[in-house]
Length: 338
Image (cartoon, rainbow, N blue to C red; front, top):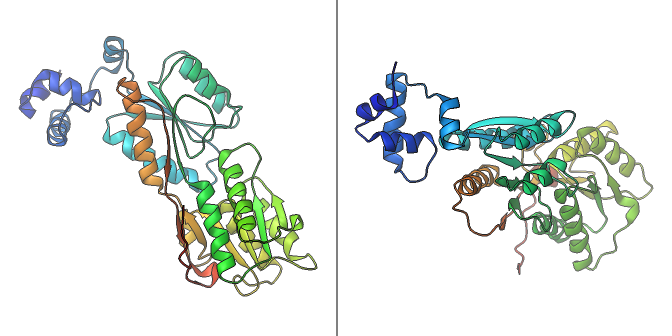
């Protein structure tokens, strides 16, 4: 049977170095890590996961909680997390926050089946999040955040991104703006709506509440909301949607009425999922740097697991407005930001 001693001999390092690499320690160089992993592959070494977990009190398994994976945003986020965890020699177990997903996450946290958890869909009422924090489990929130909790949080600048959308639309001559928002609880929904409203106020415009709708981050709700808006006597000339899936639904809703995007109405989303760049939608949107956000979330979580992290912080990544055909490829004006 191949042992870690054989791997060490093949890699030309000590057995302790092999152990550090397999435990995901940062205390090795990239070159050494690569040499050890090549030796693992060449020798066919298979570590005894149970024995190592009993010895180190680590499972090298990270839990990830997401929302409905029918939203294309989450598979992209999962892919980025999976790649980063794999590079750190960590396994990933995935739960959805609907159905039995929360129960599975709770059980894993209580039984220490995972070393830490990445929450991507938290709200202030998320039971697994509060249970993990109560047990002092290593936790990081990604994509969404919760005010006042003691853990690292990684998001984009949702407030600034949605404010910039308003500046862009107003700068292009639009004054009758529509908004299709999301549920009340999630921070992404609340911050993007707040940024939109602040942007409208800062532009000196009156927001007609009849042009505002609320949905559930879905294609169906975006479709229905846009149909509703465009059948008003005085419809909006531009509509900002809380996420790309809603915006894609809104474009399809406009088309179902025989309306053209962007000739009859402009549409802007948020996230920049892969579908946003498809020729059939060509959606102007606010880009979140999904890969960088996932990389930072994993880094912060592993630091917490290794007990080397600083005080918890909320890390907000800068936003980027990506202009495409749903707004006639009209260039954005340059604005001064605080």
